Length: 379
Image (tube, rainbow, N blue to C red; front, side):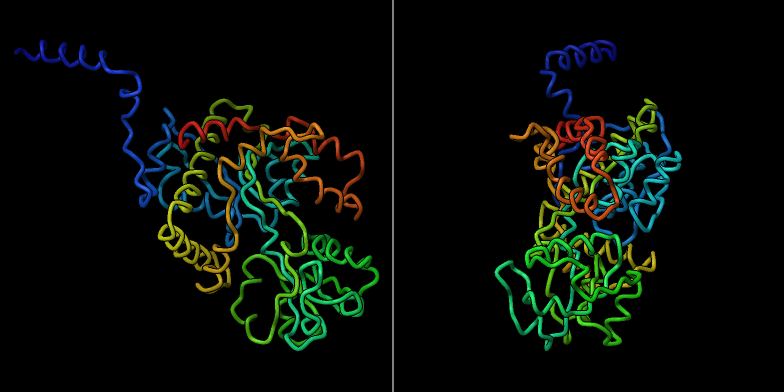
């Protein structure tokens, strides 16, 4: 048989195959191999540069870091620059000025970016409430009173007279205000001392005060197990604190960047899918998280990261798809209803006005296209 005849025969056989078989050129996913997840994402035809907002040591930003570290973003054609910000609102400012194309942050950034109309939410990464905590001494009145009917430690009388150190205008203030409302207490009824978040751990170690507010990696410090008790956290305090992946509206208006941002989001979902595939993968993620924190100067221990990553579970694509497509009884998307509680608090606290509800709930702030794309890849 001549080479030409062989080529023609090969083409005839390929054309006779079902289209689904031809599409299966990608290697099958190996649940233990993160790179096989990235391989499911069709690469860009031309490379695109993206500036991606991040924050070292924050678990929900770890998904992008690992996609960058392991070469997933490069594999799909993205030349990524990770831009670190200490808070969500500061990242929103960078997005508004055109310096950042996509990224992610917690409720502070979500509300600011939505009300300003400069971002779109494309998924809810996780509930950060578990990482917001108040500690007391084990021999304190709050600790000795035990768990109350609301699920956290202490009585109305214990908390009313307590000197509590916390950062002003933060999710930790939201947590304390919400929990104390169960006792019909406001922060004005308490001896609250507003202190910079970075200084509160030092205040705790010095023995000043009765209760101390800590969050994220600091709240998992192993030294807190010696003589201290976790009296209140976001879960037993009854709050929901979403962290989200977001995209810049101006960036997605650029067709080239829009496609690249879609690939970035799929890479994030690949990392989450891989982490959730097995305990072995989660343990590997803990190793990478420790390496990331260590290289970026985030003070932590391996033990604290291990506890942190077991506590803070990312939402699945399926859960997110429901949030962004399911309309509830009040006529709003489920994801909008999930933001109502935090918005209520910050409106009551004077950070936003009643008129800002309409800006937050504007349909253009929510985009399910990215989730639909990721679901089409990973099913």
